[in-house]
Length: 339
Image (tube, rainbow, N blue to C red; front, side):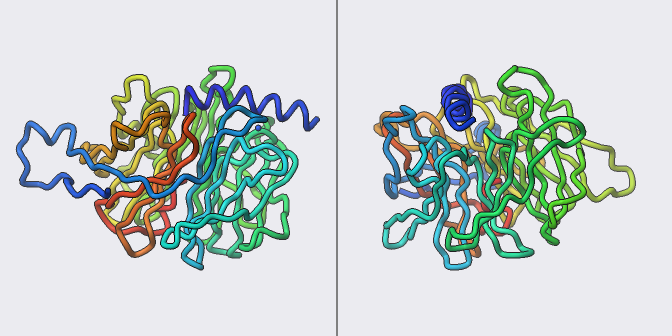
């Protein structure tokens, strides 16, 4: 998220001060001509519903963190929702209804994930450097983690859980200053043993495990690149490396998700679109909203329904916050809830 992210950072800083922030089916196939394989096919997303409008208090709305709960409903956060307005929303995608799950007076929540360990919903509060958790019904708020890691307070953006319920957090430290101080931080499922796994990153944003939980895909907003960070060492494998360089133009790499075939869904901030890559870096497809959809500037994230191929993309701009839907290249798994 960049243009919206820059605006949202200013909004979040203000809020912090006041507080103390038609499904497409033309997918790439191995038999297509070589000339089109470099950029893949265009997948046309269709509008499902509008969830929010621009808030008078903050001048914008910014949807993020789509994640399916055990009840089959989709949970979404509104990063710039002011105090008292819904900050976590729950959507019945079949009935096309939406309701408020949670709000508070201070948090600016940029992602949401359900823990495989305790079943609670975890939220990252980027403006206060905290991770909080809720019961699935939105009650029982707890502070899971706060404070410094290796001498610096986090700016937690997105979360990925491993099988045991330990958290891996994209820390956007240094983003507002334009400094490459971003990190990947691991936190034990009990909130202890916080450790930096990677640093020197440029506005660390999206984070997701690969299919086998052997490594993490990490997107860096201000470098337009996706890196791969092994967490299970194998013979001959080195450390973090650049895996994909995203040709985004004015758009930048936001959140990221992975499907059952290992394909990467890279959201684009500054363009209402999403780039899809194979795990080997091949551009397979570009998901686009219709050209007639005005006032939508960014596609921040995506969730693919568990065991199915229907994907739900969060799209925002002056026109409001929307869900768009499209057919994914493969089925949804835990990693398909955008981190």
